[in-house]
Image 1: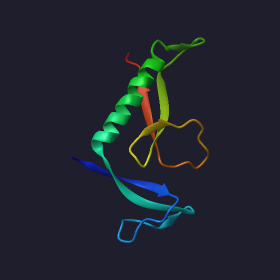
Image 2 (image 1 turned 90 degrees about the horizontal axis):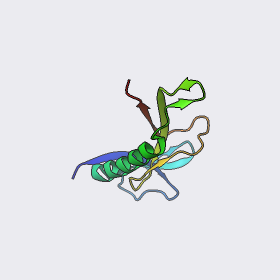
Image 3 (image 1 turned 90 degrees about the vertical axis):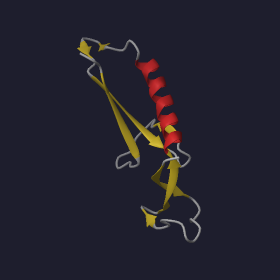
Image 4 (image 1 turned 180 degrees about the vertical axis):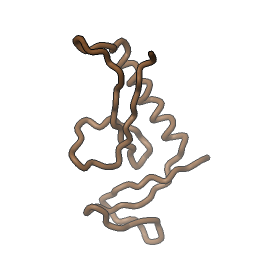
Length: 102
């Protein structure tokens, strides 16, 4: 099973001998290995739901929709969630950009 490293922030300090444990921006950060299959399933689920949500959305007023950008965040467990409100300087997000076919 393929794994991918993800930097996560946790309230508790990582155990001795684990990667990371440094303080970055005031939090406790370390590297956690997440299954690629878990991430793939989470991202596929979110993408399918976004497809359903945006289905038929091609025009806003007189303007034609050309692109949709959505920011998602990966949890320490490998879940993928939409970011409801982004603050300035927010990090750790992935922006998915969808363009409608011509």
